[in-house]
Image 1 (cartoon, rainbow, N blue to C red):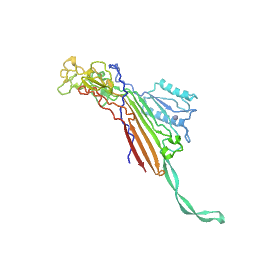
Image 2 (cartoon, helix red, strand yellow):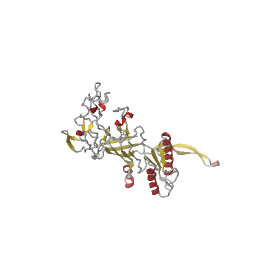
Image 3 (cartoon, helix red, strand yellow):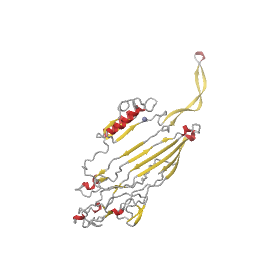
Image 4 (cartoon, rainbow, N blue to C red):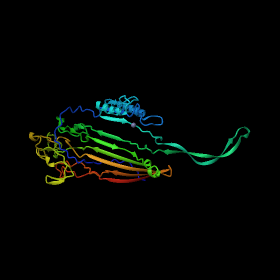
Length: 424
Ligand SMILES: [Zn+2]
């Protein structure tokens, strides 16, 4: 028996965009008063009013969505009292109070924009005619002789009948609903601008009297991330209704699409650190010195082979733009005493980004019941990086290394795996 779980590999895609930009210091601002990432949350109970949504046996989607959304909002308010919550509706009516469903959709968007919402959560639910999880049913597993009284008065007599023997059994409901999307879309544009001292377990700052010197993106700042995942029960049994059910039923398609911007990159000056070396502060901090940047930095397409510093390779940036010159030499011995080279380098911290990643994974699942409900077989075909796109890892940022500026590794190419699971 093979046990399969969802595997969401981190695979990097590269859009092949060579963006050109010039580095500059971020404007100075009050670094200690960094605003919260999520200030305004829009909670949208789906449907409402004349639009009841999906019909259940004894309820409508609009009512359930409203109930859950209000409870969710209350829980958020308790846990994060500073977050402002804006509801698109709090009663059983269409958002905006009208009777036009399309107008209510536009109202939702307008309200979210007007309120400057940072996150929009919409609540929907679907109906299925079968109880979730499963239910108990009764079946006849044999007969037994049983004596019962029949008739009335003088005619009353004892007879022997064959009575059925019942067995109660559990019918498992494996359905996730027909043609139902269970999806999540998420786009985060949260900034990770921070002073390094305040995060990531006490990273060192260059100059404790000038925290702004270290102002920049945090090491794990991913500016944008978008993920879409879903499960779709393929309706083959409807498109080919006369076909054998064992073949046409039980198919599910599950894609996972993701995109994110690259991680911040940093180029250290590569100065050696030793007890005897003072560094710019005199306290032995030569390891914190950044490289000097000698010109505008242009990001390159790593698919194109190029030669810099008489080394051929797949470059992400021109390594000749970074230099140790002016940093006081590799030992930085005169750094503390010579004011001209008492520097932490001209490259700002985490000033540019590595390659972004785009990836699509796909799973095709076929469930086949065997011997009634007694057993079932699950077949899975899983495709990672379906499009087989080259997904670049970060380039080498070691200024003294032989591959400085080059990208020499990628994430996995397309991987296909099959799994067969037998449950009984
Ligand atoms: Zn809905």
